[in-house]
Length: 176
Image 1 (spheres, rainbow, N blue to C red):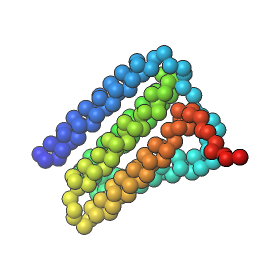
Image 2 (cartoon, rainbow, N blue to C red; image 1 turned 90 degrees about the vertical axis):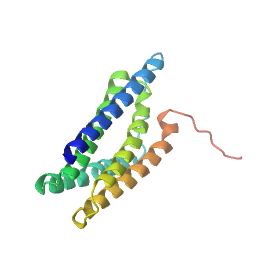
Image 3 (cartoon, helix red, strand yellow; image 1 turned 45 degrees about the horizontal axis):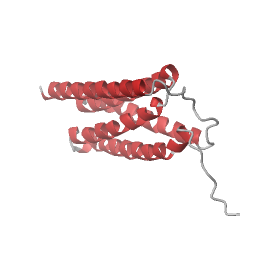
């Protein structure tokens, strides 16, 4: 019964988040409907591929392996539930980014990670509280802590890229 309650709770929580995140994106998109179409600032910095690839690799592969081993193979329902919702919301973020960049073509695309990433922090923290602190789940807890730190660092890097994403001009401070 407790597993059903956790699943129902997480379903409702994630559904409400997605509803309000999507509503926010729709409202902001409507507010910016007369803005010029958004284009990505190209070329990407040389470090971008390494950063983006690392975040994708570290944000997908380790949690997927843990979900498949602990959640599916060894049948721990809590691990499966926590990481399944992690992947569902990550997928919804990717879909939201794709739709806002390719279909809406406005700057609302830049906002999507700033809406989804704090919620991912919450998901990972909540996963830590839902998992027992038993020794066989300690590695799963370490993974969630690692993922939380990695996504927080990613968020900081995202914030540092705002001037570039908004095409803000940078003035030189040369004193000649």
